[in-house]
Every structure is written in C-alpha cells, then in structure tokens.
Image 1 (spheres, rainbow, N blue to C red):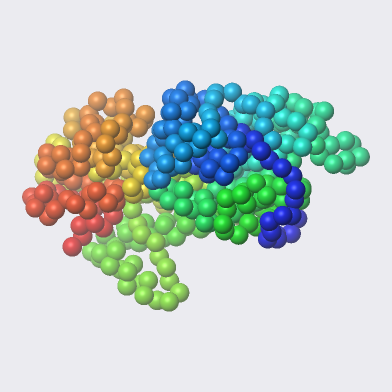
Image 2 (tube, one colour):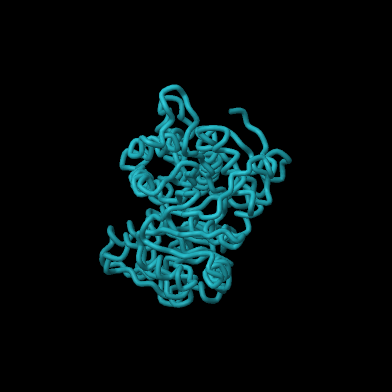
Length: 428
C-alpha cells in the first residue's frame, strides 16, 4: 500500500468500546485520551497495583498531566481497569517488546496478548499493535490470533478478512506524552487498506496532527528508523566526548560552536542512551539485516560502552581523593521523569556498587518516595536520598541525569568535592 494521508470520514466503521492491553507509559495515556473523548475504554494489565490505582483515578508512575486525564475519565465512568481481556470493538496492544541476550526482539508479551484476545474477538473487530516492534510483528500477531480462531481467518479464495490488523507506533517524548499524543503526526500501517483507514478513524478522534497511512511493515520500520537516527547522532556526540576528554577540550563548547553551521545539528553527549526506544529499537533493525546494518550496530556499541567510560572516571576520582562515599545524581534514563528502563545512569550505579562493595553510594533523586530499580534493590551499599543530602555527604559527585531539580545545587555545595559531570551542568 502506497503511503497516503488520511482524511476524516473515510470510513464509517464505528468503535464504541476499546480494550487497551498494557497500562504502562504508552497504554495508560492512550486509554485516558480515548476515554476523554467519550469512548468506553477498558484497560487491561497484569499488575494488580496498576489496576487498583487506575480504578481509583491514580497514576502509578510520573507523567505530567496524566493524572488529571485518568481521574477525569474514571470519575465519568469512561475508563475502568481489570486483569482480564474483555469483549470490545477494538483492541490496542501496548505491551513491552524487550530484546533477548542476542539482541533480537522478545515477543513473548505480544504473543501472550494475542492469546488472551483470541477467545474474545469477533468479526469486524480491529486489533492495533502500538508496541514498538520489528517488521513483521503485526503480521505475526494476526497469525497467532487467527491460528486460534480459524473461524475468523480469510478463506482460501482470498475472501475479505473478518478481523482487521494494524500497527500504529507511538512517537512521544516522556514528560510530554499528553501533549504529543494529541499534536504529533501518526503513522498507521495496516495489513489491509481497510485496517489502516479503520485504525485512522479511531485515532482521528484525538489526533490533531497528520495521519499517514501505509502498510504494517513500513510503519513498524519507520518507528525503528526514527530512533536509530537519534541513536547514531548521540553516538557521534558520545564518541566526541571521549575524544575531547583525551584532548583537553570542552565537548559541550565544541558542539555548541559546530552547531552554528546552518546544516549541522549535533545532539548532546551523556552517560549512554536509555529508555525503551532509542536503546532498544536499533537492535531490531540490526537483527532484521545484520549484514548491512553496520553503522547502526556501531552506534549502539558506542553508546552501550559509555557507562564503562563513566565508571572508570568515577573510580579514578575515588582513587585520587580517597573518598568512600559517592553521590550519584539521577537514576532515570532522561531528565524530569522517573522511568529507569534501560537507564545508563542506573547501570552505572549498579556497576559501581557491584565492583566496589565497600563504597557507599547515595542515589540522589529528584522525586519524592522514589524506590530503587529492581536491578539495584539487592545491592546493600546503595541508598536513595535527596540530591542535596547526597551532595552534602559525598566526596565525589557524579551527575548522571539532568533533572531540573539538580540545577538548584550551588557552587558552594560542590566546593571541595571531585565532580564527574556527564551532562555539562557544571563545566564552568
């Protein structure tokens, strides 16, 4: 199917009830936005705490403005949450798609969602995969469902499909999800043109950006390409930061000067790359064509190696000062969120704690009541404290995440301490 732009009114298929499978960082905002438009939305999640929180109008993670949307939708009776998949007109699958040890996609959650949907699905239903996925995953989702429901599969003569399948990847920035869900353009790819236009009609209830239709595999690849592009750019910046350190050059000043060129836009270096998108999606392209994805693979390797470089810098600072306490400011994968998925900051803290069991590590947080991520909880030499407390008690201060709250730390608080600044906060 050639790429085209959707215009409202191209399909009359009515969707009144939507089941959103997975109430995480994408599923819950999508459910809340749809419910706010008057649709009856049933959120499904395997975590009892998430189900309970949503039904009480609460949000189980930090995302600006999401709490207002959830509370309003629940109070109006448009949004409910439960543990089991219901009957619905449309199903939106927003479950994790992590990678395995060999960096190929682990589709176990997508496949489980398909198995849970199959007994409930009916002719005329729409199934949308929002989870970021390798090309062919939407087709695989359809094959799992229709394999369990052969009564709904197209006949051998190429008859019309009884169930429609589409892919609509999210394209939002954590911290701005409730804005960008509405304002960003959307790419929708269908296994059939009818599936694409029916999915577009659903998303047009809230999407103010353009809606661009294509086939499912192209839509899947488009999301991966967007994140791989950013990953390659960040890898260039991270590699520049290492080279600049060795040459005694301020990399942030260097990039600022280079970006004055009208056709240059280098991104900022950091301790690595995190999150479930940029740190993961490029590997799906590499797995799809390992022989030709050479640049994308190299960028991933550069960014994955940056935490080791930061750990070495911290250990050198400890050796120089003789300090026994480190302030590690930030555990999230990006600024002003509490999401630690694939976070290089959390990985740096884990490696420091594991390699130096006698070292006291104070994880400074920008959010109240922030628990340690699961991968850090079993390490006894890490404590979560406020950023101010961490800086006060440590001899070495490591800035890992550029939370706005950390900008309030003054030069007087840092006086006499060894600083490892991965974000360029205090370079002056």
